[in-house]
Image (cartoon, rainbow, N blue to C red; front, top):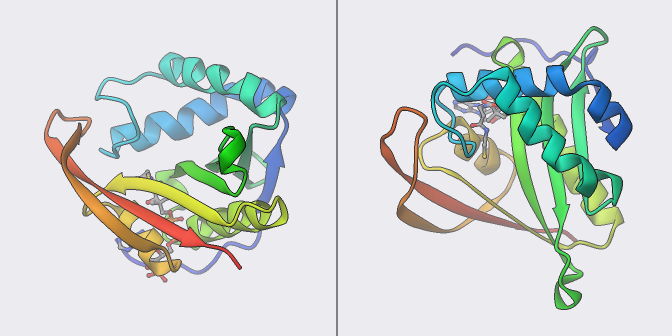
Length: 180
Ligand SMILES: CC(C)(COP(=O)(O)OP(=O)(O)OC[C@H]1O[C@@H](n2cnc3c(N)ncnc32)[C@H](O)[C@@H]1OP(=O)(O)O)[C@@H](O)C(=O)NCCC(=O)NCCS
């Protein structure tokens, strides 16, 4: 895939649970697009917009409770990217959070949006005092390239961790980032 100029016209912002509910179709479209591209983001081929709506609806209580924050890329007409920052809830893990659902719609990829979404989530984690961030991603994926480009460190790999949307058994790479 070729690189494109950055798109500063895409705004990054946190979405409230109410707004996420109102924009479930757009969120679902981003997730369904990622699965259709073959990304390993929990789901298998044949994933529909309705499946996507169900997934995002299941996230609303956690967003409303601020146990997790949802950041989106908004081009003014529609949402084109997502990332979630999920705060560890255990009393002994108040310094930790995970990154999930780092997704950029195929129409907006390789223009720096993934990097900007990740930076927004990291900044919010820092503000919340979460200094240890963790995530996992499919080995060899665009996600792995993105996290390496953004200064994340590989912790290790798990062979045969999950199935790709087409059914292949795939490895996962675990990453960490320590925030100052
Ligand atoms: C991973 C993903 C979020 C990246 O989003 P993006 O907006 O395209 O990423 P960016 O444009 O910000 O890329 C930043 C850097 O990451 C690296 N990178 C991102 N995508 C890459 C790719 N497909 N191949 C190689 N490097 C890549 C590059 O270093 C890039 O910098 P450059 O464009 O200056 O070379 C996007 O490809 C995606 O949504 N994929 C499907 C879902 C997925 O796999 N998510 C990860 C789940 S953990």
